[in-house]
Image 1 (cartoon, rainbow, N blue to C red):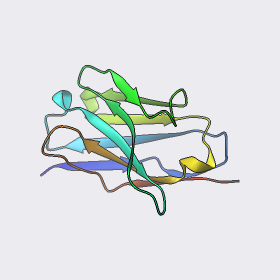
Image 2 (image 1 turned 30 degrees about the vertical axis):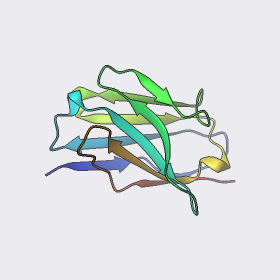
Image 3 (image 1 turned 90 degrees about the vertical axis):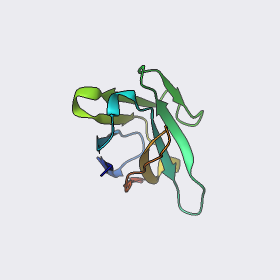
Length: 114
């Protein structure tokens, strides 16, 4: 059974930082490309970051220079370090496998507010 479990969300003030984690089980993690998505209220899913099996990364323009994706294959975990957070970063953040079949985590809420 495949499981992706996100954690690390919460309430943070503008300019603050959070680190999200996504722990995977039931897949061959090291060969999987992984993505971080978010969905803000009333908006569609947005691809925030990708981290590939070779550790290369790709980011949405809206987060480039502020967010960093990484992975620890020994722990079957991907991370999203989010710095200089803005209110518009408020959303539910999800991790997802990028190879078919696609699996999603349950999401973790990030709220950026003073």
